[in-house]
Image: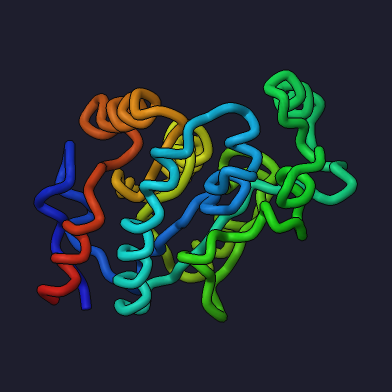
Length: 230
C-alpha cells in the first residue's frame, strides 16, 4: 500500500517524492520518557511546565496505533547516559547543574537521564512492543553517536514521521540531522510538546521557513484519516 502526498501538510504536500508507503517510512518517537513527562522527572526539576509535553501523549498514542496497524517501522529514542556518565560532555554537565537538575543526580525516579533508571522508561501509554527499536542517545539529536542512520538505511527508509519532546530541542535537532542526511521529514505537530507554547510555535515556524527548509508539518488526525481511506 502506498499513499499520495498529504494534501493538508504545510508548507508543501509531503513527501516531495510524490508517494510514500509503510515500507519506506518510519515513525520516530523522540524522548517520550518519564524524565520529560512525569512531575517527578528531570524536565520538571528544571522548572519547566509539563502542560505541553503531557498534552502530546494521547495524540501520539493514536498515531502510534495507526502506524502499527499499517506495519510501519517504529523507533523510540531516549536521551540517556551511561551509569558512569563517561558519555556526558563537560558543557552539558555544567548546563544541567546550573539549571538545578544535575544529570546523574538523585530524583524520585532514580538518577536523572541515566540508563536503567525509572526516569528513563518510555511512558506507559506508549510502551514499546516486541521488535520496536529503542535508541539511547547521549545528545539532543538522535543521529549523533548512535546507529540510527545505519538502521534506517538498512531497512530502506526514506521518509520520517517525527514526534516527541521537546519540539525546540531534541525533536528539532533530530529533524535537522535527518534533513541533512537526505530524509524527507514530516513533523506531527500535536504529537510534540515543549517547555512553553511559544517555544513550540517558534520551532514550527523555523521548520516551515523557506518553503519547508527542514520538512513539512501536519496533525495526527490527518495521517489517520489518510490511512483509514486506504
